[in-house]
Length: 363
Image (cartoon, rainbow, N blue to C red; front, side, top):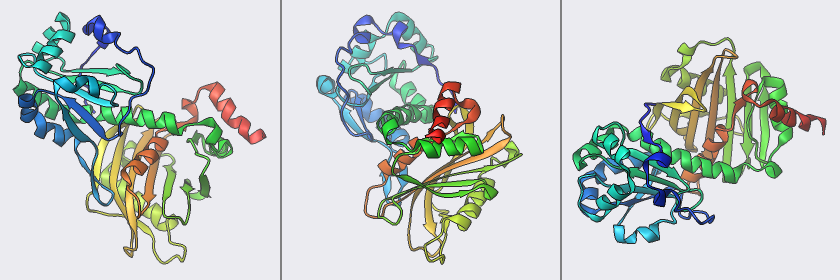
């Protein structure tokens, strides 16, 4: 993922904006809503680019946008300040209300960086309310702003997805509702661990295939599946789409089977994407798309991260799937995604945390 220069809010925005977070109340709104504060003419010029970046479609299998954009007039800014996800957008040469506002909150150093095209993003967390991300997008003029949005779209999308995942992780990770005994067993036996919510079962543990399956609500209409699979003495050259997809299909054909053993899970070729991502500070390939039973009797969304771990010489494959035919699935797959990001190798764990996890085996 390419890195873009982001203003340090503490040094580049005037004090009145920095100190405006006086409330400890939490931001409100849906996770997939972004409120865009922009003047009408500017918004019309960049709306297509914004929708291309933030309105990407995922298939669950119904098409769903990652984020829904809601334009807000400057006069309604006060009402929008409580929302979780906010973009304030205007070029510096604008003489309209939002343009004047952006000019008023950026100091001379920030404006100089914008004019030199060395930065165009300001991110501020918890600006007006807790669990909030406010992003300011600006440029010398609207044409340059439009170009930068498209050029750095993956980074911009990452900021909001990461903020949403962080909020969700704070809601999901709770030591009172986790299976520490399973976490400890995985750490002791395999040298890695992952957060296990209380309602997940250790469905399969197959050391001969380096495969662990965690399953929530089996045989219900809202199942969630997570598996961890690893390859010993591996090479980073494994990290190509064909190898990952073939290995995923091989392992699910063996272990993700119907109760009567007549059908198995495979990846759907349609709507599948493979993207280079940063997974817990590692280079990884993310596969996102749909799985199905080979007899087409069912299916749902999936997400998979595969990466090479230099310390152990292993290829790790972390995979999450949803089977919930009666429910909207975008939020469910995000929950699984957040759990996958809790994965840690033994070397990554703080010694005290490692000791605490392993103590569960003594209880």
